[in-house]
Structures are given as C-alpha cells and as structure tokens.
Length: 232
Image 1 (spheres, rainbow, N blue to C red):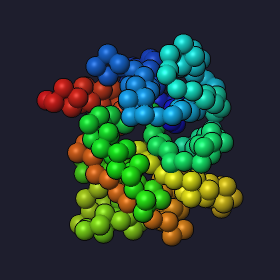
Image 2 (tube, rainbow, N blue to C red):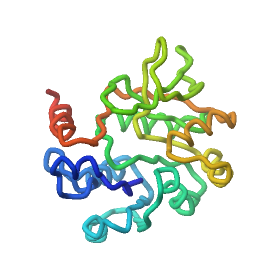
Image 3 (cartoon, rainbow, N blue to C red):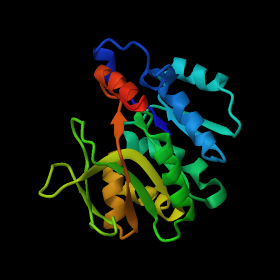
C-alpha cells in the first residue's frame, strides 16, 4: 500500500490529520484498507509512509494484524518511487499481489470479486481497477478494447469514446514487478507512468470495472464517500 503522500490539499482545506488517518464513516482510510485486505486473504501487507507522518507510524505500530506487516518509512518523490521501495517485500513468495494508494474508496463486494478473479486469472499480467465515475482533477484515461477490456494505452486527456479512468487499484504478477528496475532506469515517474510502461513493454494488461471509486483528495470527497458507502 502506498500511503506516502502529503495530503496537502486536505490540509489546505482544514483537515488537520494526515490523509491515511482521515475517517470515512468512522474508520480511518488506512485502517479500512488493512481490514479489507485481511478479509480477502492477504498473506502479508506492506506499506510505505513518509518520514513526516509520526502519527501514521504510531497508528500502524499499534494496529493488530492477523498477517505480517512490513512498514517502510521513507519520503519519496512520487508514487512510482514509493512502489519501488516496496519491491523487496512484494518479491517474497514469488506470487501475485494487489497494490493500492491509501485514498480510494470502493465497494467492498466489488473488491472481493476483483481479487477472486485475479487469483484465478492465468492470462493477464496486470488487472487494473478502473471506473466510469469521473470526479477527479487530473484523471488518467484508460484505453481498452471494448469486448475484451484489454488495456491498449493510457492518456491524460479525454478522447472520443472514452469510458474509464484509472482507479488507483492495481493487481499484478511477478512479471510486471520485474519491470520496476528497468522502468526506474528509464526515468519513469508516478504510477500513471508505470501503467503506460506495462502496456508499452508488451505485458498483458486488462481493465476491471468498478461501479464507483472515490479518491479522497478534498474535504468534500469525505462526505461523497460516506454517502456512497451508505448507498445514498
């Protein structure tokens, strides 16, 4: 899990706690994800937070997990570099893994189906969570084949016939993970850059549509997420 962002927009809008500790329906964002991962049979969990988050570190160190927790405390320039810091733990066991940022709020039932599908999927190297709910300042648009949902590319601007954007939820196998060092050498930055890199490298990347994914970037997103989770 990538929880290393500063949450500067939330702070500017009066939210004083670090983004991972923002509560939605009384549950911290990071705590909700920890619970959801455990409920979907995670064998271990690894998280990166930045060095300016002592409250988040204290929260995680006191959190009781039923699986091993690997915590990396390091400030990085962007989400892709944070992902690279998690690589040693994601290599352990040589299996598939699910990576998320700390702020997406999604249907837990849909997430369960998403994980179940990827566990059984022997064809794709990456299964990317996408949504047609677009309420983001700078969405990453996902280009797909209409029938197979194979991802053919990513663009920063809307295009004719677009439908999906990236949701900040990524399932990958070890073949995708193995591209990290080369991508780093070639100057890839941000997770959106690595998503493009996967496709450009010829890996099999497929989109998995969620009905709605809400990123908690602004104070108003908290109430939107709470209404969504309550089915309003």
